[in-house]
Length: 384
Image 1 (cartoon, rainbow, N blue to C red):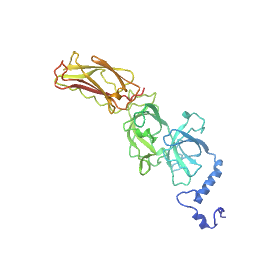
Image 2: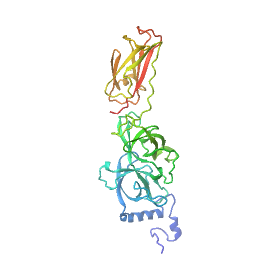
Image 3: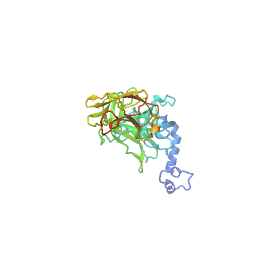
Image 4: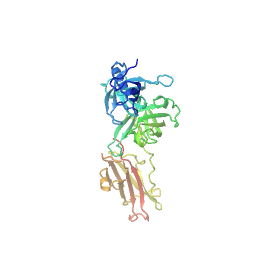
């Protein structure tokens, strides 16, 4: 026996079909409206209703409670993928969070648990053509530690730990279950939400993953834009990584892998005849300047012999893009004879400190017809 909606004008079948407007408009589509009514009436009967939290907006790291129905996910053969991959179904069929949305909950689904005891989950798949609202989410099984200095790189350094999905197989994390042979082969695939932190990840950057493994990024995929004409509206980022050797500067306790562009060799000393100037101490110039002073000694040489004369030198210290007056706020310099010390103030600068030591042609001691010079750079970006 047919069941008719008596609130509609007319009872013939043509009238009922004509009420199913296109474009998933619940207010005018009879099918969607009755489906929502059915879901609402049955919602409290669902045994797999749970409380979890959903991120307020992408990258916000702030979450709000939400009741959903949670389900297991099966592959095309009907096998459950993993307990780390779940489907969440929303009560409101028009509520469709974008891919890349993060959720937070533990397997106990207790909103009152400490946040550090909950897991972060990332939405990696959904079906926008489905009349119901659901997302496939995957549990983050670790974090990537970095030193965050703001989007412009000029902020105060802080430690940031980005939830990530580390896997050896992209076919088992909910992106594409048939994609078991990705075009870029790697020892480890790491998936993170695309946000203000992860958009700054670079090729060759190093991360500590898992308990004590170090990986280096060899390729970054940021191709999954949610809108055709908005290249920055990316849902998630995939890092293709290979194992890397440990570095003495890796901080395993803080889970921060050392990452710097390979230090370029300092400019060789300018030689005039047999004369040149060089840094004698320290033997290896540090890459970072901190608030603890570092002492430097330079020497002027005639061949292999250091000239023991009080030859006047000019020491210039500059910061790229910073005027000389403002630059003095970033460091403290003191010197006498052939030694000087440098230390960083608490003010942070992304630009390196450039130190140039010169001997003029009219120095009054050694005969040179060109300026002798030695230059080195030292970073002010270290976190302390």
